[in-house]
Image (tube, rainbow, N blue to C red; front, side, top):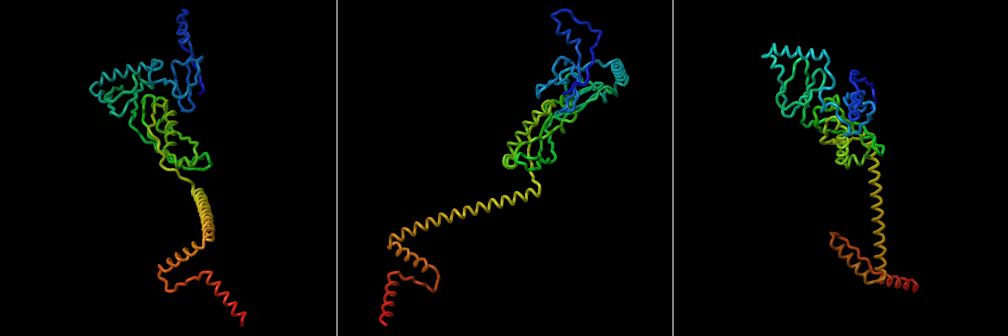
Length: 329
C-alpha cells in the first residue's frame, strides 16, 4: 500500500485540554488519508485512519471503510442545494414522481444506493421495495445467487518443468453486496489462479488441487465480499509435441518392462528345468515314467505316424552286436 496524500482537518476545531479526552482531541485534529491498495486496484477513503497509525492490513483483518459507516464527509453547499431542489421537484410532481422513486429488487438481489456519489447508511436494500430520489441517488443491483466464471485456458509451468493448459471453472457468490460494490470494480473478474504442482498431481489428484485453489481464492476474495463455493478443473491438456514425446517415453518404458519380465520368466524356467533334469538323472525310473507320459500325450493327438524312441540299454546292445559282427568278418 502507498499513501497518496493527506488533508488537514478543519482548523476551526479547538483542542481539548482535558487529559481525560486527550485521545478524542488528538483524533479530531489529526489527518485523514487516502490509501491505495495496489493489489486490488482500489482507492479507500477511511474517515478514522490517521497519519500516526499503521496503514498495513493483512488479509481478512483489513477493515471495510464503507459497509458500516454513514456518508463520509459533508455534501457541501451544492449538495444540499441539489437535495432541496430534488425534494421540491418531488413535491410538485408527486403523483408522477412516485413511479420514478419506487424500485423493487427480487429475493436473490440487493441494491446498494449512492447519494451524490456517497454510500447511504444502512447497507444494501432488499429484497422488496425501496425508495430513491431521482437526480441525486443512484443504485446498483447485486445478484446473490451462485455464479459461474469460466477461466480461459491458462498455460502453467508445473514444478517438474511441464507446460500444461488448465481449464478451470470457478463457482462463487456475493456474500456482502456493499463490500463487493465499494471495494472492487468488478468482483466477477478479479480472480487469479496460481499453482505449484507437478504434472502427475494435475492428472491424478485434481480434487485436492481444486480444494487448494478454492481455499486460496476464498482468502483473496474475502475482502471483496465474494465467497468462492467451488473450483473445478475441467481439463488438463499438453502441447502436441510434448504429448508425442511422453507417449514415446511411456512406450519405451513399457517395452523395457516387458523385456525384464520375459528375462525373469526364462531365468525361472531354466532353473526349474535344471532342477528337473537333476532329479531325473538321479532316478532311472523317473525317466521311464516320463517316457510313458510322453507316449500317452502323443497318442492322444491325431497323428498317423508315431515314433517310439528306444531306451538306451537296447540301443547299446545293438551297437555291441554290430561291432562284434564287423570284427569277425
